[in-house]
Length: 264
Image (tube, rainbow, N blue to C red; front, top):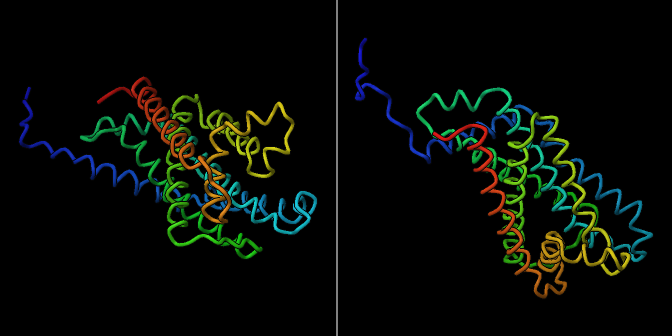
């Protein structure tokens, strides 16, 4: 039996090279299957138009309801876009792609990082498009350039956190269909916040849940940055919630990946 000469083996790719390759792979997948990106933009846009033109007059007769609802629509857009990550990860696990990567001289776990970074890029583009449509239908932000930078930084942190959470759901699910179903529950979270109506207008027993859940301080911070409303201590809570969700999701993703795909 011949013995392989170690010097003849191909060099092991660096972590940065592998990560960039998987990010590009996920972006190409998005371009080749544009349905998810289109739906991630179309669904929140349709909801924004629905709330603005159908319900807005009853909720805010002054006609400025679009200014109130856009910060919630921004997070809704991020959630819709990130949800496809759960299905993509579950597809990779089911199709045996991870096992193929494990036979190659690279760290297979970086495939998850590729999905997450590609989702971040994809959803920031979708967020910019949704904000552009909002301006066309009457949204009139008053924030400075620094406020806009702060808003996009906070939205990016939220997208990063929720995408890792959806990646964990994709790893835990037994099939892509199950991953889509589990992730669907997270889509309801924005409705139990200050996204569409003020928390004070809700039943008293629901106000505590809506006021103390993660999305309300994020929405109030975005609203304050873009429209000049009082932010109070919402910015600190928003950053803290994003950091906490991201930390839990990253740990959960690593544990689930190690359990299902094994360590290299």
